[in-house]
Image (tube, rainbow, N blue to C red; front, side, top):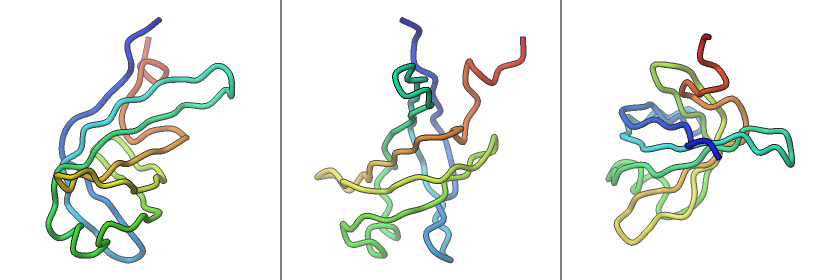
Length: 100
């Protein structure tokens, strides 16, 4: 099995009309059963995001220097780090998108 693709660094999270500058760690993989790319990760603790969401879930767009993708923000852990998940072309390069 191939290692998962990933990204760690800064990003912009857009929820409704509001932008949050975040630090994120992401991993992803192609799932042959459904034929789609799945990616997920955690956002670093962000007081502004926690104040805005208050532990609730939200639909969002995550943007890195390499791209943007729709995602779901949910499940903050005890340290205030929200989970982020997506099923699509991710906002980071992958082995599938790397040039030969």
